[in-house]
Length: 104
Image (cartoon, rainbow, N blue to C red; front, top):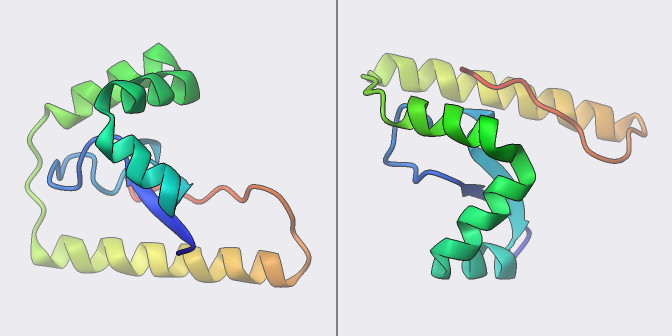
C-alpha cells in the first residue's frame, strides 16, 4: 500500500508531469477516491494549493513541452538524488514534511 504520488494533472501532460506543484502524496485509499471523483479532486487541489497556483499549473499544463529521452534521464537522476537527500534527513532524525526540489 504505502504512499502514492497523486498528480493533479495526469502524467500524460508532460509539461507538468515532473512539477512538484502538480502532485501530492496520498494513501492508496485516498488516491483511489480522488481518481474516481474528479469534482472532489478539483476541490481538494484548490483547497491545497489555492486558486493562484491552480491557475499557474493549468497554464503550464496547456503549454506544450517536448521531453526527450535524455531529458527523462536527467529528470530521473534529479529525483533519485532528492530521494537520497530526503532519506538522509530522515535517518538523521528529521520529522514532519520534508520538501523536495522540483526539477522544473
